[in-house]
Length: 146
Image (tube, rainbow, N blue to C red; front, side, top):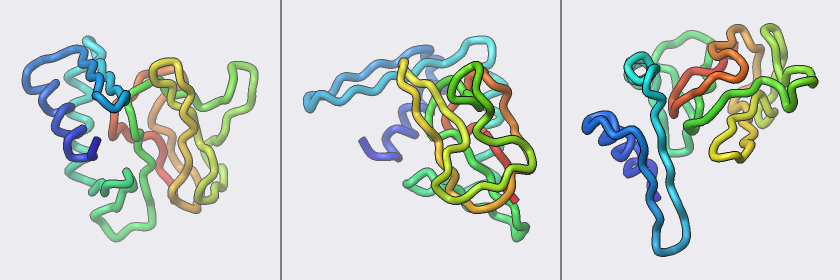
C-alpha cells in the first residue's frame, strides 16, 4: 500500500473517531491500526506539529525546514518504543552517543513484532523524546541528532 493511502487512513481514523482499523487485502497483506484513547488528543497535536516542522518523504526520512545542523528521527509506525533490546541490556543509545547512518537506535514493537529502527543520519544524540516502554504513533519524534 502506498504511503499517501496509509496517511489518508490515519487521517480518516482521526476525522471519524475510529479507534481500531484492520484491513486484509486479497494478496495476503494486512494493515492494523489502533489509537490509544487517553493520549489521542495530545498525540494528534504532536503529529500535526511534526508535519508542520518537517517534511516527510516516501521513505520516511525527514528533512528539516530550517538551516540548523540538527535532524530528528521519527517513528515510522505505531507501536511501543524500547531503547534497549531487553530489560536487562544496555540502551542502544544515550544522550551524547555518537551514531552512524544505519545504526540501530531503538526498537518499536508493533503487533508482537520487534522492529529495529535505524538512524538515517550520522551524528550525536542530543535529545531523547520518548520514555522507554511508552506508546508512539507514526511521526512521533524519537531522537534529536546533531
